[in-house]
Amino acid sequence: MASIVGEVKPDQGATVTDPNTTIDTYFRMWNETDPATRGELVGQVFTEDGRHVDPLADVAGYPAIDQMVAGVQDHYPGATLRRTSAIDLHHDQARYGWELRTPDGTVVVSAIDVARLADDGRIEHVAAFFGDLSAELAA
Image (cartoon, rainbow, N blue to C red; front, side, top):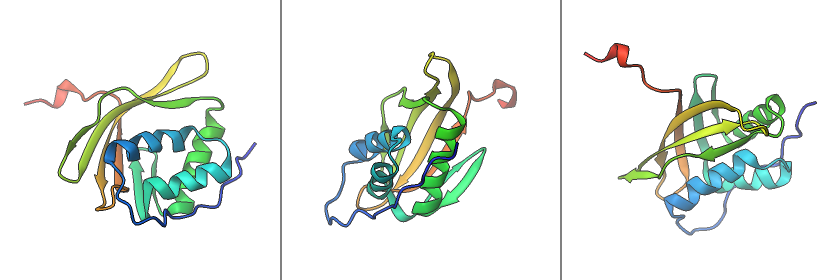
């Protein structure tokens, strides 16, 4: 069953959002199943041309980001994304760990995100790296 994609509305406020609030809202966005509410959250979290890149997706813009989130929710019904680390910030960059868990507690994927933040505190670009780094490539 396909999720309905919400209408995404850009955050029209001139206020600068604290990066911690942006990232906490990012996780609310991933877990929001109501299309209208999720669409509002996409606009609060991402700049209008914001981009999300991970091993399975490379999308930019509000509609594409919203469709990607709806697709993950369809593929893993009832699963939730949760942050597993503190948020490490410097300059316009943030990194944090997260995992996707099914309702029975199974971890589907764990990852680290690295996000570039706009001047207003929203995400311009986020790259997710799935799994742990391999020691095999260490010199």
